[in-house]
Image (tube, rainbow, N blue to C red; front, side, top):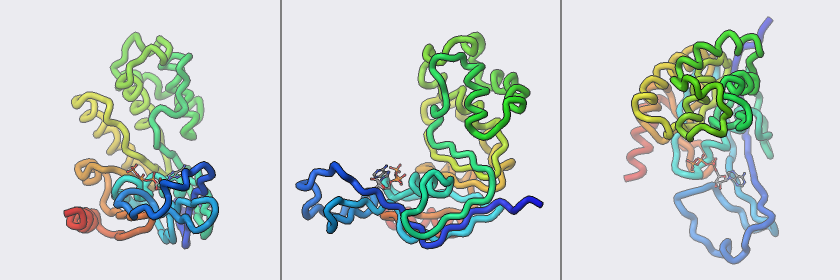
Length: 250
Ligand SMILES: Nc1ncnc2c1ncn2[C@@H]1O[C@H](COP(=O)(O)OP(=O)(O)OP(=O)(O)O)[C@@H](O)[C@H]1O
């Protein structure tokens, strides 16, 4: 019997102790809009990136993450993927996770684009056989032609993103955790990617997507979480959360 896909956290916190902080810059600093809370009472300053996160996400959830720079979106994605263990509290993850935070991770500059397609797929939890059956489709999508036989180091940034997007949108994850970062491709290619991205999200059991773009969030999500200083400020229907977040910034 397979267990249902889902994520549950209880009072989860993530702290980063900083051993090489400059003490002067931490004395009496004003609490800015940006970033988590810095606890400087102890000898080693601690950045409280996430505090008391209580979440139950079930199969079918399509959750957007909004919040200002440093609010804790990326850290939350890493907690939900199991990359970070909570410093306190618990996080239970059921399902095969595809964390897509950095499109370039898992790519080798010395091997060809075609070989990288397979390697990157393995990194995302697919089998070699599955990837080999998808290589042609991915290759066509990237429009990279003969460059696919050249080593990745010869590619421009946009060409790398095309390759990475081709692979990422071809996989079958149960839990898809996405951090926005696909700005380097041209507009026409981005349009084409959006369709593939939507199809990927439809195949995934559960999506959490951090983005600063309302347009992108509307396309992929129906609920949202607003992160502020490492805590959940609001969790609800996408439009409600977007409206509160927008109002607060006025
Ligand atoms: N590896 C780390 N070491 C120390 N502090 C970190 C680390 N990663 C994140 N932080 C801190 O945790 C807090 C939350 O950062 P996080 O990257 O999760 O924010 P974010 O909401 O994703 O921001 P952005 O929109 O700018 O990407 C910030 O104060 C940041 O300084």
